[in-house]
Length: 133
Image (cartoon, rainbow, N blue to C red):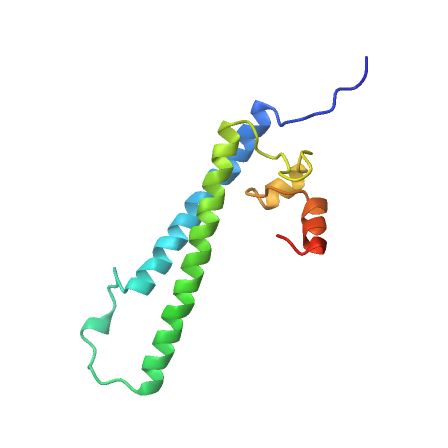
């Protein structure tokens, strides 16, 4: 009998990945909420509301830059959350861990490091050489 080529991860393996993703998702959402609060200036219990209203231009500029950086980080974090949630859908559909280009299984080591990965390293490199991503 020929050895069967594995075409998907087992339910047990998918549950392992679900746990990894849920843990990363919880951390990502907490970080996103913190960044969003910085950008929207909500939920602060500091003395800023009672501090003197005179500020130097440098302080204001630094504060603005910090909000812009927080906004960019929040956007990246939101995209990461969406990618993790999409990975959970793939687990439900039992298509998680299958490369969207080659159809091969993405190695477990890669999925443990990048649980929302949809490409094998080879496929990613191939697309990069072709100028696509």
